[in-house]
Image 1: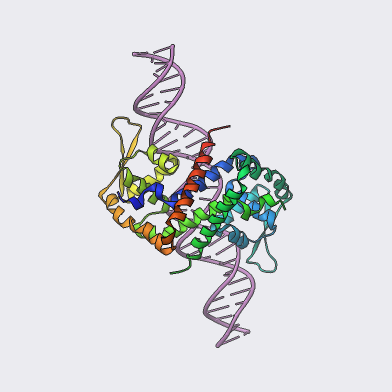
Image 2: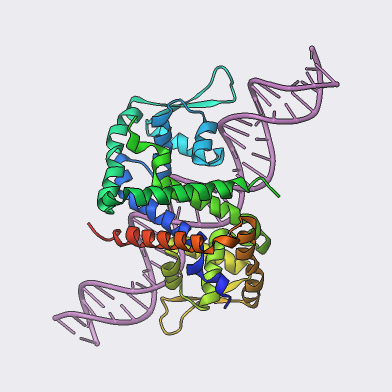
Amino acid sequence: MNPALLLDSQLCFALYSASRSMTQAYQPLLGELGLTYPQYLVMLVLWEEDGATVKRLGERLLLDSGTLTPLLKRLEAAGLLVRQRASADERRVEVWLSAAGKALETQAAAVPQAMRCRYGAEGREAESAMLRQTLQQLTKLLQGKQDQD
Amino acid sequence: MNPALLLDSQLCFALYSASRSMTQAYQPLLGELGLTYPQYLVMLVLWEEDGATVKRLGERLLLDSGTLTPLLKRLEAAGLLVRQRASADERRVEVWLSAAGKALETQAAAVPQAMRCRYGAEGREAESAMLRQTLQQLTKLLQGKQDQD
DNA sequence: TCCATTTTAGTTGTGTACAATCAAATTTTT
DNA sequence: AAAAATTTGATTGTACACAACTAAAATGGA
């Protein structure tokens, strides 16, 4: 057995399983808001920049239109937002929050708080911020290499 | 705008985007072996413990049978393994590598090496191992809370 | 101006993820 | 041993991800 291929020595698997575990941990909280985890991420962007285009959402979330289009249609069907072609450039689709979509932000504010409380991250803000920065740098490194070779 | 809801301040999103970026980075290398990233993970377990049951694979990978069953069927169709009911306990399904599945390990050995080379992790084994351990602890924390409340 | 190129979303098809449910086999209780 | 509970995979349905392709709209020269 090649030691370089041991599952538990792989950074990639540690990342993969931590990410899925995190999504699972969010699920019960988001379920109360009627959101899946990727839908929650889209809402986070819209609460920051209402009216963002599909392209802009893709840039923020690193997701393509094949993922976003059906996801946005589901959020639209749920009455949280409206998709609308931009008049200036008919190729663009702007995504605008509905009143319900805006109102949901207040409830959503309890989510990060509940996670910190549930998983005891209160005294570990610095640790958590450090890990986040490390992961952001890793993402940048991995993304930057995509269009080379 | 609630500062606790800023996308780029979320550890969960840093984890989510890093994980997807990692999978994307592996993809061209695994494509040469005819594997997807989750299929590669299954093969890593089987190279460690050939004949593992579906349950055992699920324990190692934190995946349930709804994910594993179709994935294993695809690997079986590709000729890399065989699924076989255990005679001792007919509920169990053992997964055995074929000759081709065993032979693939040699080629797969080049994958972690190519990743290190491509993303310049040669001098950073300690850094990488530290991050991996942090993520493994985080997974444990997040998983441990699943069956509480 | 006209045409090639680029930009932007959408569509289609494949492959995960995972909840919920089912069915069969085994184990435990009585 | 018979009934109840548990274990183990498979199935079904919903929701991502993402590659490959299409089509419409805008842009940038020649």
